[in-house]
Length: 88
Image (cartoon, one colour):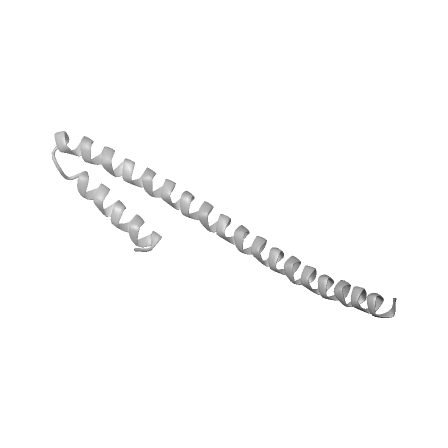
């Protein structure tokens, strides 16, 4: 269920709650408000997780770049050492 569908269904539910007897209405309105709050908190949590995953992906890309650069440098330095030991 996407965000707009959820909000629409919740609004319909709140509207229907307004049509029931007072004794049940207060309890159900409280539950609907709690549901809305939990949904907002869940959206914030998911957004935070997505940001963390994006940061992790970027960090991995930098680490892979650094690893490849280190491997190239190692190869270059080993070649230099071999040439020096061969000439010396």
